[in-house]
Image 1 (cartoon, one colour):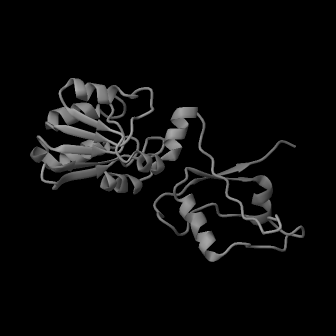
Image 2 (spheres, helix red, strand yellow):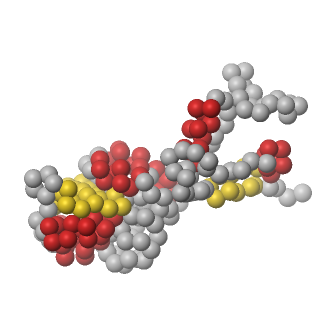
Image 3 (cartoon, helix red, strand yellow):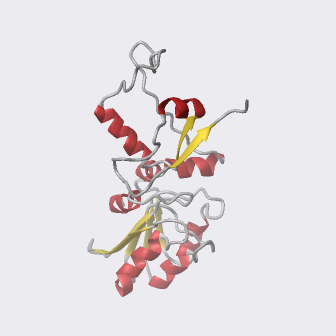
Length: 218
């Protein structure tokens, strides 16, 4: 499961969830693995099963999120799992999406597949907190980034201050941005600092968050 989580972490898939999957034989050999890459792309289970080919029959599928049983942009993953002859599916966490919400697990069990749930659940939740938060609340997950001095200041009144954090802290900011869908600032910050609002180093330079500026009416 840890390998499936690692695979999923390498892709930015929102609004779809990050999902990784690994097909493993009875003797522990990895037969196929894959991750979902975004809307319209094959789901992780399908990618892993395709990589495993005929060796998937009788094997175990580890997947970070409950397989879907409905038609969306792609066919149901449960169909692919059953067609491949997988004997056991190990699921890290049930999908809170109302279109899934246990139906994938139920269908697999009803079809004779052994299903284990809640394996490495905390790690799977940490993998994609924004997805689970949105599914549970209907709201985006917002992370506030603010640098502050020990005396409670965030900038000099005359605007003379620049950075009050270290290079390591600024690198952490870019790693954080690389996981976000958007970076939001106010119009005052835009005028005063002219920020780039992008990722210039960190975990991933392939994904750039959408820059958003909030401005009030005059």
